[in-house]
Length: 371
Image 1 (cartoon, one colour):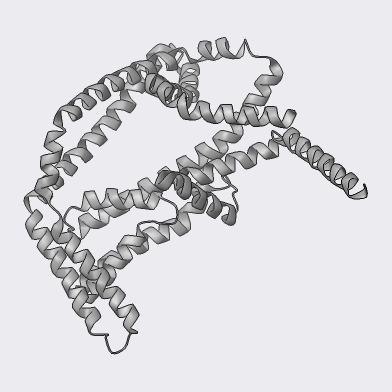
Image 2 (spheres, helix red, strand yellow; image 1 turned 60 degrees about the vertical axis):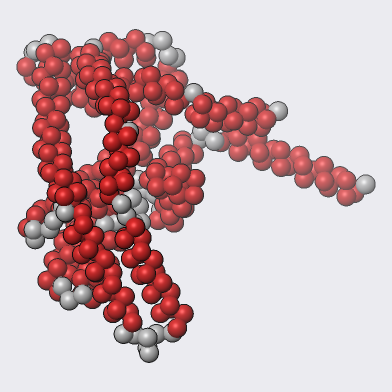
């Protein structure tokens, strides 16, 4: 009976997460994010309040304004540069596609020079892949994309309006919750029993250590990788360097993939077509990223995860099968949270019930054999 009740509760929680949480997130998303911001700023606000003897409201207002102004300025600068590069890409699209198709044809010709050395199956597969890539590139229609995008303009404008309202609500809620955070926290914790508060505090600590530490570390690593890529592409005068830096930084955030999955083949293609300087520049940038990953990742991650490599791989693969690219990121984190909850003893009663049920089944089976 207890196993059945636990199973029913698990199913109820799963249905809750699938059918109830998304609508609630649509309604309460800005306030949840504001609560996270208030929780992050609370130590700094508390310290400044003690040192300066200024009201929490004034300190919260100044911090919120400074932080969001800095974020807004950074996003504006990056957005201005990105829009400029996107417009340049649209204006030069025919020449860009001509260059890419010419590169693909050069690679195909280079592969043809190995027809006497490589097995026929490998050679035909490589040539077929290159031909498919060339035909796919030639079939790309930027004007069709722009027409489709223009047709979706009303919905985009509506979405931007809703986003602007949500952003304003988020900023205001961040101020109100940060300014009144101790009182709001007391109102919640005062109505919770002491043992429940201790258990929730332990679960929160484990969850923050697993999820928050891992995610924060990976975001920091990807941000540094983005700056390395942006500076490197700027120094080598790479066209559309900012867009490429954003793309490769996103790839670097995804487990297993990384920026090297694109940069290394790109450098190989440059070697094939005779662009030795470009290949060397790409490999230098990628080498700086790899060196930073090798030296900086252990210091930034530290002991925040503690997930063995094989279990991390299991989480990545299972997450990929269940949730795609997002699952690859979230899978190891959720697995680490479950392991920490197991160490806490959350699953110990369920495991004891399963062992008892297994002993009962074995006893029944043995009794049937004796009869």
